[in-house]
Length: 91
Image: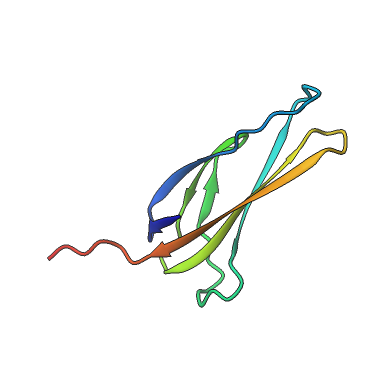
């Protein structure tokens, strides 16, 4: 996935629990290994299964992760690798 510097995108985690347990979501972002960027990973706003991630203002590769838990020991994680690219140029 690619996004321009400073832009936002909505991210949704679609998951179900086989026992019907209520699920909690913990979102995080980190710089991808080998990325030449600083530690700026942008920002995540919102909570639950759907959040908005705003890209940093510098080019980088960021991993946005979600940890889903059913509160009874069942967990799952998913990662999205996002390339933050230079913005559009208008002359």
